[in-house]
Length: 433
Ligand SMILES: Nc1nc2c(ncn2[C@@H]2O[C@H](COP(=O)(O)OP(=O)(O)O)[C@@H](O)[C@H]2O)c(=O)[nH]1
Ligand SMILES: [Mg+2]
Image 1 (spheres, protein in one colour):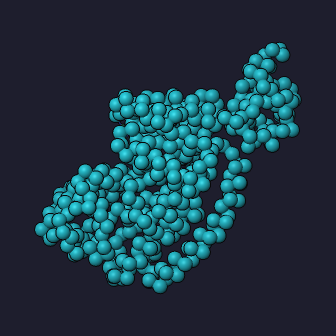
Image 2 (image 1 turned 135 degrees about the vertical axis):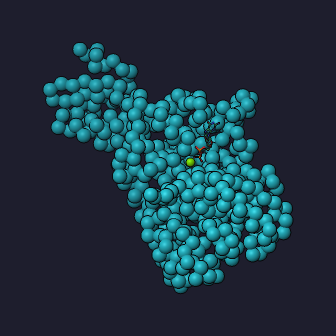
Image 3 (image 1 turned 90 degrees about the horizontal axis):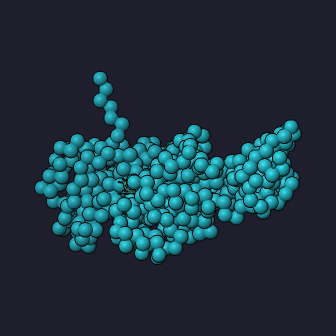
């Protein structure tokens, strides 16, 4: 009988100190919990400890360390994650003491980025962060790494073999990655143009971790008429293809969230996982109504979006978890951020309004035409149906007639079929008959 368990069970240790007061350490621990969840880990226990003076060998005193290891054991954990930087030596000592995998917040975050690195650039950035993280550990104890910490990061070509490379090889690879990054960056604008031509509108959900991005993706999926889950090889697991009642299709992607106190070495890796966002047709920026830091989070998110070149992508600001907020606070928020939409991914409140806002944003700038498309060019008709909004449809022996609204990006393609630039409302075909 197999006792193989798929899900890694983790025990989380939050650390308060003189510099980091308990309430904030608590918030960070909650965030760590959310991060573990993002990676699909099961948290089987957590504890917040107060650091008095750091003991080099185990971060905490031996007595405390044994107590923690015992608690993790009792909880049935496979690993312990510290919400505090562990030196390579501390990490090793902890693994010896507990006979479990032991790592810190930075390593957890690298794993998340690796699992979400969709583009070539993002994969390279994550690999770079990973190697830079590994390097000092390798320098301290080559043997230990050979013993294998089970650090499987998930990106293609990474993992065990990587840890076996010696220091010099890692340094060589770091140089190589930096060069590759240069050339990937040059290619990027070409790719972007290619994608623009390919078509179906794309929206990305951005915002802080724990704001409810994944919940909102699920809620919108439920609110759409039809949703396809990773039906296409090109869709990653965090993208859904939605069809709204008005016949519009949308590819909706859940991005990796912003993280508080992101370790410095991981900033670039994070940005490149977010780079997708700059190629979207629409950004759905989710903020958490129940978070006291919501304004600061919104500001940080906007700033980073700006820095990755996503500032001219249309955006909808969504205040989520409205079920948890005081009415006054929610109203004040909507006044502070005009055009924002209040929802609850949990109760479904406000989702209709959000769907409307999404459609409105996607059809803004669309033009209305009457097209006559010969049956032989049916692919054009399907393009219009997929990307535009068909107001009316009429068929005769030779052609399909469409009274429709289409986005600027496919205007060139339909140009030869335009019979009328109709600014009028619906009803033109029925009036003819
Ligand atoms: N009360 C309430 N909780 C929510 C809502 N949306 C999400 N949550 C909870 O907030 C936590 C984080 O949600 P998640 O979707 O994983 O956030 P993400 O990290 O941004 O993807 C989860 O425990 C959700 O159940 C909401 O509208 N109301
Ligand atoms: Mg999520």
